[in-house]
Image 1 (cartoon, rainbow, N blue to C red):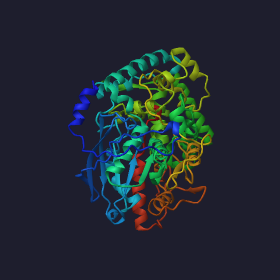
Image 2 (cartoon, one colour):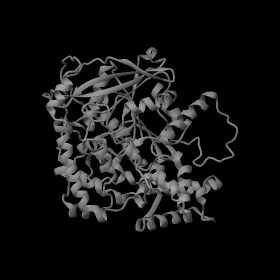
Image 3 (tube, rainbow, N blue to C red):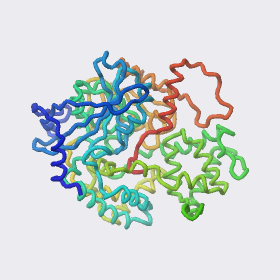
Length: 569
């Protein structure tokens, strides 16, 4: 158990010497909502080399940040790991750093930069050092957010989690109640301060600690929630902010049941089918049991009918005495279809596995989708803490409590997604059972109910046309919430614009970061890849060597994908 005494003594051993400065107040908030910052600011980071990426030095450091930035009495701390990749020309342009957040909540920024630094450097160029960090509670931070005594217990709990609201509401309720108590017991007083406004203040402290006056930031997925929160608390410090794959800030902080984020989920599934049909022989799914589909709608109907049958009759799979189980609708949707909707680069492989399954060969689909892709990311419980601590409708402030009232509440809502909506029940019970109080005073200013937030420089917003969990409508809301913000719509499927390569989108990104040039209103971009590449290959390239190299990095990033477990869909 991580009680407060143990962590306070540990962190006190590594605290960086700080200078006392006057309390800082976030000027964008109304007087009754001002959030005075803890005066303990002024640390200077001590860097040490910790590897390299494509002949660029990686450096690492740690910064100790107040447990509660918005209390004058907070004397305890979180320890935040930070990493940067040194750019070759950044010293000539003032040693500017661009902060990166890969999403989640709960993704490791340190791991993200280690894995993607070379490709990100090619996208952004040599004028910015790349900097990322593990937010409080995440991965290498101390204390790490945990509700379970071991990773094995966490994995087992997730793997056996009930997802069917119709038949498992009682189990959802009891698990949620017990988990909330375990989270509170494991983390002590630290748990309630693991939230996005505190992380935004951590980020501002890091900005001070590197000696940089203005924020340059690129946030993906949940990173757009963090970015929007930062821009509303510290608008005067925003010089460049790129938000890619927008989360609806109002829904994130103020909604008991998340609905808008599923606006386009089923449309992308339809898009997958249509692109498969257009690809002809490049997509094996067009022919099922030797019969060619005559139209995209016929193909989609075949798949939907199979999903309905699978819900009634899961398919047993026996490979050998140590590998056996079943293919269920839930495993195929959550681990196969939804993952494919995030990453169109996986569409050819998914189409192959699905057609094999439809033709009676269960082995490829079972091997690929029997375990959740989320499991490899579950090294802590920061997703739970950040999401529930942020939300103003969690715990005692939830509109309904108890097994039957919650069941009736969720059942009465319009189903936003045929694929995913039925698996939302577990998250709602978690939200209602959460026992930690909301400790932040942040109230987002969102379109159309609030005046636009004026940042020091305008924000650039990027979005695909069809995103499975961060729809275009959320991007348009964010654009209208910040004065002068511009939106680039990448006409493609997938989660965040990095899900498909686009030299056009990267061109807008580079001009904005390096020159402050915003795109024209209602800018759109195409993509530079096929969803189902033909075996015959493409035409002779007319791209320059630099463009070919850049396109290669975009393909790499599209293959790696962007991390998000919003509501653990």
